[in-house]
Image 1 (spheres, one colour):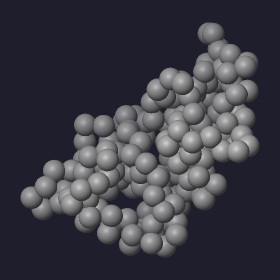
Image 2: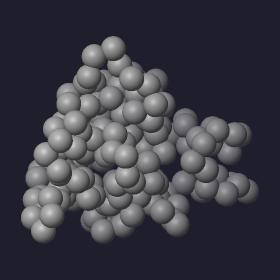
Image 3: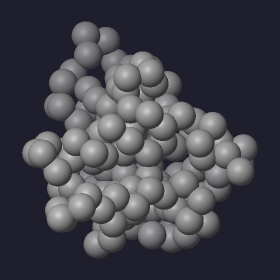
Image 4: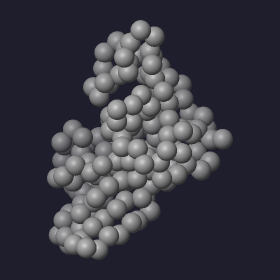
Length: 167
């Protein structure tokens, strides 16, 4: 498993939200197309905003906290026919529980935790869906997703479709 950094959520030209991860210490990016509700949930949490009513991910985080469950990590485990699969690892004392999840839900939950939750991706997932970005004469984009060297990467994201990640 490869540690990933969460760079953020974007809505691209085709109105499809993307959560963007970057290989820590590397140049591969992992764009994952997600639903609008999950993009909203992740975006709220990243910006520190509180919705007027708790969202499902907020409720689950509260239930976890009240029952002593700790989210240990998020793993993006597989990619089949353009669909990403993930697992979350929960811990309560010595008890460890792994549950299947959509990556977007797992990330939306992870960004709500008061502790840092590692996000990992399987080597095979990065090999299949990872995108290497190296603009001519520029370093890889930084976490801010800003600056002139990111324009080429944004253009790529504007053009990419979920089908591009299928075999």
